[in-house]
Length: 319
Image (cartoon, rainbow, N blue to C red; front, side, top):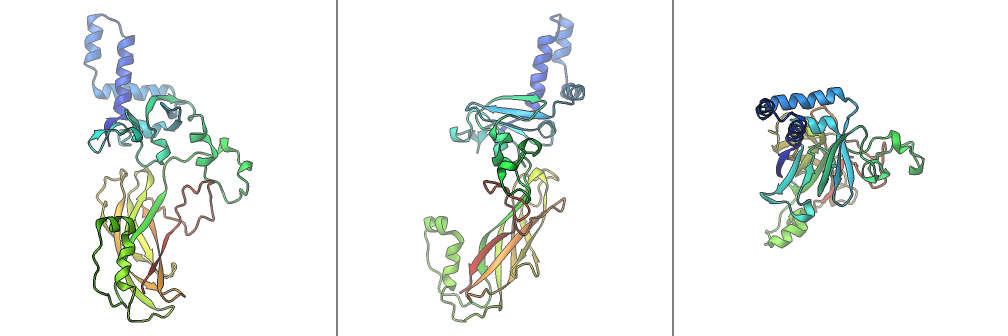
């Protein structure tokens, strides 16, 4: 993404307001032109100090969507919120928000409003279903009927939690590979890691349920709010023991500004399932605040299944 930092846009707006309110005499104009970035930032801080009730930064899109983030995120120079006008070095495509959209790293995608028309500091969060509706509320396990929820006292989804995923599994032991077959780029794109199973489909050595085999797995992990991922744990025996993955990319992101995924890989001893031909793997990420993923979603729920960050599980055939 390319664009202007939101904090810079707001400071420029403050300067324009100051110019409009200033006297037209030459001395005042000279002082206004010489205002430094620090002075402008100070004026913005003074505004917030004088109006502590302004706790929300609201966005409105050309199609009428309303959403907001907390002002602390938007006004933090290290929060890296931008008003974007470029994507991959070119003008924003229409479907991605041309001419302007907000990029709020570390927050749920719904807060990254496309086709930006207006932004404002406000006392309350944005109105409407995108901000206050049930779709973006995470419900406690005591709630059995979503109609019973008082949405006004429950915050909407903003900063994301910890997620991870497994994207590839390879067999390392107890298999005799067949000759490698040639695949096209299209087949690789469509079928991905499933193709890696093909050479082992006719393994000559039968497996016994409960037996342990060695596999190599790789994947990704991410935490919201800029929190760095510090560890990824992987299990092949339903959590009885865990292996710590090696983070291969993304571990050098700035402290508390880790907006991108990390990639990892791990060799894992895995127990053969009752079917005698497969193993089940699970992974969980851990961020710098030692938040981690729950084993299941039994403790909370959402009507759309959002924020389901329970262990990522995958079944892999080794025969």
